[in-house]
Amino acid sequence: METSIIQIGNSKGLRLSKTILEKYHIKDKVELILEKGQIILRPIESPRKNWEDKFKKMAESGDDQLLMNDVFEDENFDEWI
Image (cartoon, rainbow, N blue to C red; front, side, top):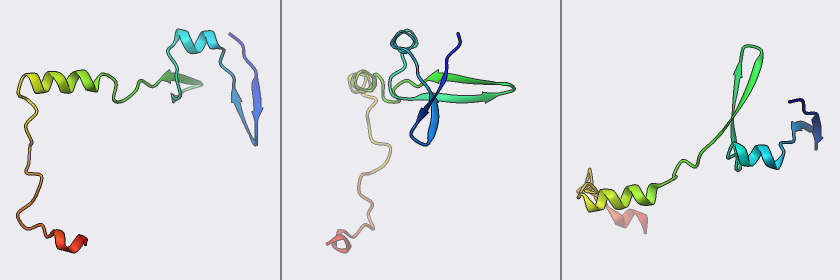
């Protein structure tokens, strides 16, 4: 597929069609990979995708215990006032 480089302010960029965005599930960001003689655009999935389900499964299996205490013995909260 051939596409034109377009002016975007002081920069230049590519315009991707709605069809391409939908087909490759591109939302707001892409990963830009520079390789020998080519540029690869790869969609970035949401880093927190499905976290709600994963946390729910952790809670159900009892695997959501703290790894360390939330308050250290030597903490002095008076310093924060």
